[in-house]
Image (cartoon, rainbow, N blue to C red):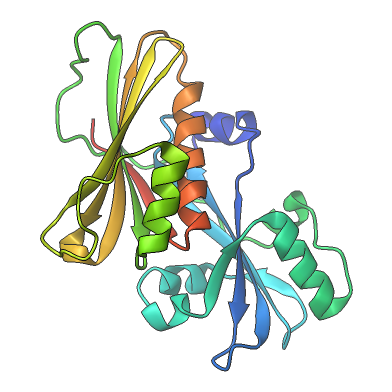
Length: 240
């Protein structure tokens, strides 16, 4: 693992673990899935690690195969509910009468880390938008369906006018948001991608100064808000 990869993981103190309640085919409680996206120095995805606990086994173990299946198996996604840590802890207590392990303990059961952060994909040159030091473009990709209620909740949370009809499969962009933070400019578009098989947030970051911490805060916050509406994060790619 590269030094920059280690430094990014150690320096980012905001909540990093994603919790999911897993039910069996009949809707009964089955277990927990806990995931963490590992980030490169520019906040793009460098890997995904996870651990799982099931009522049947009664112990935590590496769950990387389950996390991979979750992104491609709609039947599995139908049995999984994104939750926060408090809800996961209550669920765990109800099933086994014990406190949910703290996050360092949970990470100990995750699978192996990638040897190094991957080389970033770039689809355009390094030129920044006029007036800014650097321009970055990211796509946060999500699996599962976006419901009308979820769209309304995101529109309210982001103060985002809905500009497209969710029911129309030909509509690609449903809304756009602009924000200014200490001179930096951010924009994200909510769009249908992969012929409707997934949803994405295309995020443009125009940075003034040398620090980029606001990028990480924004990307993580957007991911959390989408998870709260039931969508499953797949990756964060950087294109510029």
